[in-house]
Amino acid sequence: MLLRTLGCLLLPQEPSWRQPSLHGVRGLGATEAAEEALKGLRRLVEEARDVWGLLEALDFLEARIAARPFSAPLVNTARGILEALASKEYESIGEARKSISESVDRVLARVVEETEAAAEIAARRLEDGDVVLTQGYSRSVIRALEKAAAMGKDIRVIVAESRPLLDGVEAARALARIGIEVTLIVDSAMRFMVKDATRALIGADAVTADGTVISRTGAGLLALAANEARVRLIVVAGSYKLYPDTVYGLSIETPALGDEIIPEEHRRLGVRGYAPLFEHIPPNLVDALATEKGLVAPEAVPVLIREEYGEWPPRLEPLDKLFARARERLRELARAENR
Image (cartoon, rainbow, N blue to C red; front, side, top):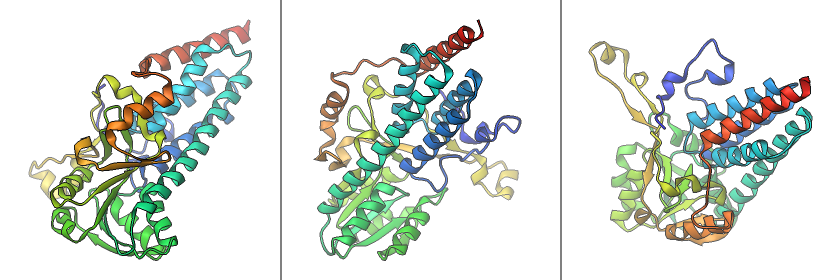
């Protein structure tokens, strides 16, 4: 699946939810972006008065996945909703609408529960006096640090600013507001500053079937620096971040920013810009995943997926086919109601 850059998603003539090129990216961690998208989906579903309203809601969900294709919560939620729509015999639009809303509510509750539990596990691995190196904005990481502070542990944090979206600046602000001592650094200083760190923490958009972590670009540099300095790297991610669709490989191109990151005078000279927004961190650079089930090695991810789906490898229908079948089922329901 080849995606256009986010900057090319701007379609002024379409509904407003299609328009922002950085929707679900700027200032939002993976969990917040997923929650915002799911709440938007639920709102559209609840406002739908006919099949066309529900089809519009599916368009919204597909667009949000296209903007953030590595969002395991969105992909997993979409799978559950689409499988239900494609396989169940709904007697009315109201019944289909209720089913989708209930599915979204279950996922939102699970996200909160697993985020809190994973953050608790990570917090307990931190020790009084630790200096934590992190990058980007992750609610899971911020909650872990907040919980560690609440346990009475004196924690200091070094945050990389995370250009070009400056997610790390937002993280530094959030941590300072809860009373944690923070040092904000430029991304290029991560290798230099890791010598002062005793732990490294990052969040994730997804964890693939082989234990690879997908996170905001820059996390890979942090992982390499931590590995070189023998600083343990923990990824804070609830099981809702598992991405079982990747069991047969991952062929998604990361969304990226382009010339918009370049000063105008440079653009006039022909300088081009490219800023990929996500990258893969191989499991050998990750010491552990802090999940709601406990601290686990990346190599244990297949076990977690088997527990979730009942088999390994899980048999999963491609998402684009599920979208097509769900849309056709809704059209059939509309035709039945019009008879």
